[in-house]
Length: 169
Image (cartoon, rainbow, N blue to C red):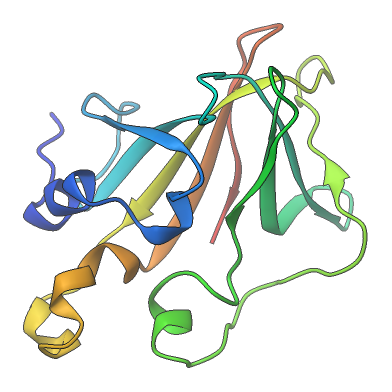
């Protein structure tokens, strides 16, 4: 099965979700095998041009890595929030709150599950299963990119090359 991005994914590629505002982003037009058509990915880079990050979030029950997430650039040291379920995505945009795990406290650094190293390239994925978009109302149709219903954080270890979904919401 070949990837054929939906019209909403293409629209988001043209105007990325606001949670990506602190990054330089590039649409991933050839995503991982098995990516469904309503899921669009963006490769992330720091505004300084660096593409290697430390990933921070919250370790739950020894394995679940939960939001809010931030990335710290290995080149310039700048830390930028990437995703917080309380402020990003469909439910947050409508003020419905959130229904998944959201953590507080001191974040943990994500480790590669294969080699335990901590330097990664990162991709953020967003699912757009809003149909028809007219359901958003005319006041929100111009910012449909912010009404994603699923978020993925995929990373590739810069040391061993392991590619893994660090978390999804």
